[in-house]
Image 1 (spheres, rainbow, N blue to C red):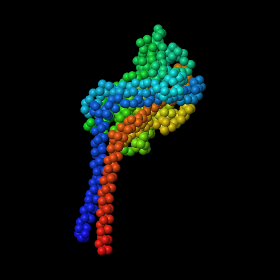
Image 2: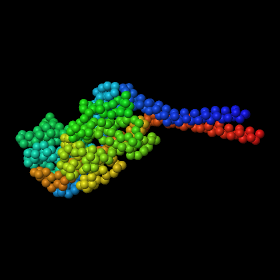
Image 3: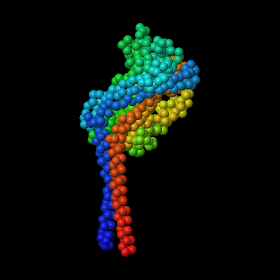
Image 4: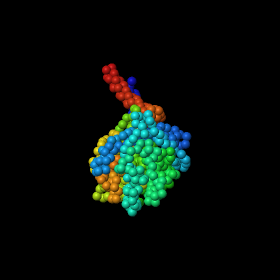
Length: 502
């Protein structure tokens, strides 16, 4: 072969290899990702008749709701000023079924009500039962005392006369009940009397009552912690369908007709309604992403940030956890100033706001409830030191979600929180006279979901296997191009050597 022909041949195959390698790289890093992203964008849109829409309308597996109560082992000593000694009892496990109803389709947005139903899971809870006796702080009693002092202070001096009639002669501020009664079936306040003063109080309770307290047909008042959420819905939601902006799928635009709440400081950013409902997340996430979820229980948005990579059932994912700044006091995080409404009495900072890790919920729930992480995780040491028996642990008590980042599909996650109330002395109320001021835990919950094997397989077949095939194909084409370059160079050198030897 002549030198000219050899050079031409070498140049051709070398050029071909380079072109193939470049095309492979362009395809792998530009063309193929765009194809994959377009396919993901098509698949996640909430369009009636699609699999994504059907799963959105009715979550195809129950959300697992676990309740843990703080049993008080020394109630008499607490009444005399000692620290409460707490014993965690649980989990009492419920299956929470959700389905969206009354759906309206406006192309870019979808409106709906979401019905939810709790069912006790006796098998998963065993050996615990929802009829177990538990001794916890008497939330309706302490709530009545606090609310009376706040809203109708002139009536506080009558509480010692009224409390024995309303609450069946309590000896202290603790209540022996059952999970079933406290959460759903109810604790009843006796309003069946011709006593004028009692009738005034019952009327006042009915007027100021939070969602957890409802006047019954027989005149009594029923308190139950979760019945207002059971076999009902929590209002009208409007969310983005993802059809025009796939990266905004599931994002709330309004709740009950408003894009702002009136819960927090007037004209503040704290009232903005934004984020998803924590069952759906946008696609194309990265370690720089911030995930926003709007919590009805807190009347506010909670943000999550990247924590670490994870692997779930062979699927690579990213773990996001609640930002540590979310519940910091305004002194530590000025943006949280609008969550401080000065409506809670107890252990406060010099600015009159709750300390780090605590959120007052009076305006949200109409009751003097304080929210924290379970076991006072990430909560000020002062609150932790007020009780005995808590064991804060990041693995057990932090909020998190694991996502497949390309699709935004949640692999597993837990929404966790603790409800508390301040035990404190109130002038004129004998049951409170000996109390040490303490932020008293009542119960904590873990509302979790784990992607079942069936949907793991669907995720793998529909998306991940295709992505893996395309990635392997891209590298294979690149390898072919590179091999062509190497082979042409080897052939060229061999031919040169052979020519010299001849």
